[in-house]
Length: 494
Image (cartoon, rainbow, N blue to C red; front, side, top):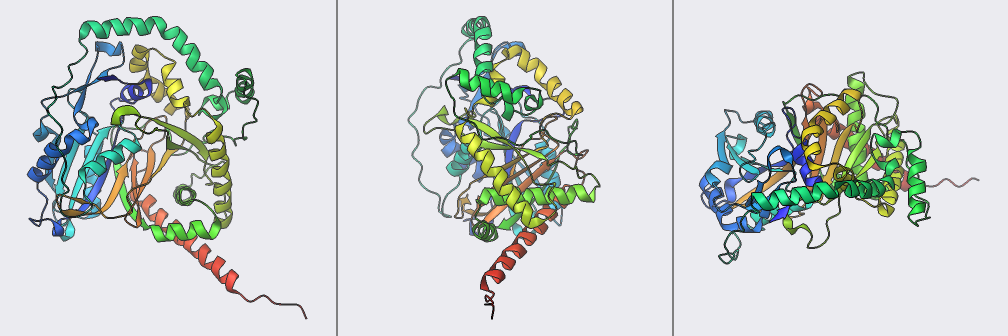
């Protein structure tokens, strides 16, 4: 039994009629290698029954007080109804990618049932060429990128032959905390809340100039510097460029509907660009996203003169920390090079901007997200967060979008004997963080993208995937130019 952190509870509090705060992914499976030549719902249920003890977020539910008087607790659910959590559907012919994306988007828009463990899996048949898709979603209050990857690893195998998994010894499920102990804890924390608020404010003030919205306030950089010096840290922090997000069609109140598109890029091409221009693979991803978004905004006559600002999630999970459930993440807030016309110069700007953001993140406290969430009483956060996010969307405050790049397995994986051909992650869109999110994961020689958007903000979400491919072709052409220049003979003056 463990109480949610303030950050975990914030992912619960942000949910509203227009916002669902779960993360998800779509695995495309080839059942040709499966023993029965297909993947069945019963096979998936049997797999979960054998391995669910390896994935704590799948076997725990929330227990808490009414009206959000205190943060809920995680408790074991001894009566998990796998028939409820695992569902099945068949697409009508021809079962193409756009039909799959539309079906998945409808499921992704629906919030999870909080009276049960916060996850669902949907097995989707009817895809072209006999393929099968598995869409799985887990609430963000239960997992971050690292723990989500751990769940994926626990359910998949390195070969068509399922590996042997030792069953856990029979242990009586841990009972919930009970109403009186929870009330006593709520009273204790409410009494201590003013002190907690002051401590959180002091910690967050150190990175005041790196926090969206407040960094634009007059004196934010000065306060951050003074707070560091008062704490005995006289090291100069790397300067950050402006992180005030411009107004774009991506930003504003979102609806409750979602659209989804997905695609893949060869990892060999990403590595080639990284080698040629002395940058990391993540820098290449940020360049691709900057170029694709610039193209989309240009097509819609909405390209701002200032760079877009992205939130880039960063894992800060320590070894053995968290018990496999909950969030240990922070975020780098960084400008994107959407305002740079020349593709080669755009590469250079992204490389230098990301280097500055990484240097700053390396010496920062990295806890500003948790600190901001911990400033407010639980009841206030639970009731006020949706309204505050809505107001931020109306005001155009926050960031333009979330861009996330998650490292994945470099070798093929199998589920129920079926080979996973690709895995396309899906994230959250909110009024505060923008009506589009771009997530990618490296897997088996490819970079698999998943783009989630609000249709009132991005009605043509498939065009963004097209622009990503065009941007990769653009970068590949730059690499070829570099190689030709390196091979050209040097003319010696007579």
